[in-house]
Length: 150
Image (cartoon, rainbow, N blue to C red; front, top):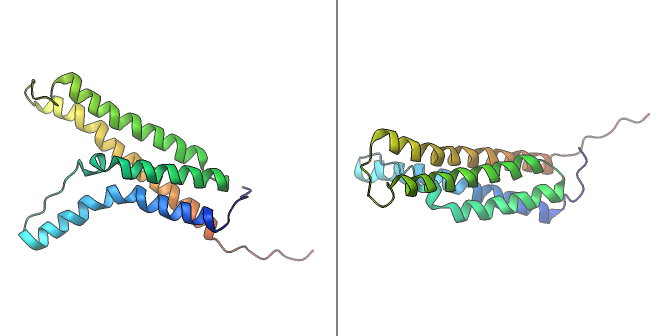
C-alpha cells in the first residue's frame, strides 16, 4: 500500500475522526457505570448511539477524508458509513411505518425487534468504521522499517 499524504494534518483528521466515531458508542457505557456508582443501578441507554448520530457523522466524514488523503481503507470507511446510515434511517423509517414512533400501534415484541435490530446494527457498523480508523492510525503512526542495503 502506498500512502501519500501522511502529514500531520492527515494524522489529526484520523485521530479526531476516530474519537468522534467511538464517542457515541462509549458514552452509553460511561453513563451506565456512572449511574451504577451513583445510584446503584446499571442503566444502559442503548439508543444513545442513534441520538448522537451527528457526532458520528462528523467523525465518519473526517475519517473518510483521512482515508482518502492516506489512500488507505477508503472502501472500508466509506461503505461502513453508508451501511450505518442506511441502517439507522431504515430503523427509524420502520418505526414510522409500523406506527411505533407515533404510538398508533401497540409495541409487540416482534415490532420492537423489527425496529431495534437495524438501529443496533447501526451501532455495530459504527464500531466497524471505528476499527477502520484505528487501523489507519496504526499505519500512519508506524515507524518506517530500515531497508537492508543491497
